Length: 164
Image (tube, one colour):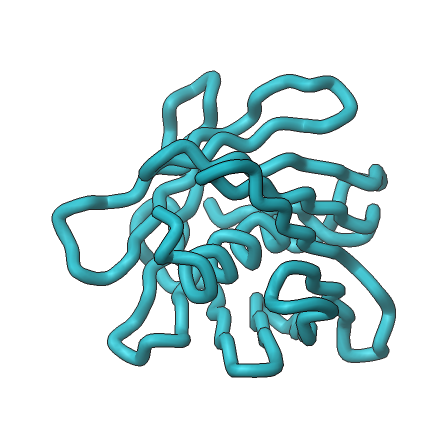
């Protein structure tokens, strides 16, 4: 059961907060925690599991490939359902028949993702708070915020892994 690419008709604003080797995702409007993201520590490649806070079930995960700037989006049983490629000046996400691209607005902190028609569909903005990172993820009503969450994890891992 992979997550649906389509949004549910609401704009979403999520906050992704890093705490050592875990992340927490909360809805900014309700201030309710939605997901816990855990890193698999027994591997040399980054591997993050997105776990529903209430059911404790992993709904999807993201893993860094052998190529240092590529990530695979996997469903809860490990099937590949999309990928993220990060270049020096561009991030590309492919999921089902959709593609999203972004170029950092400032020093690998602020990203505006557009679809193939150049419509802005989500943003990922990083703020550094002491030794941890905090991302604000804002998603248009037409797309699942899970896509933007995957983008934020890959961006943090690729550009900011030295802060872990």
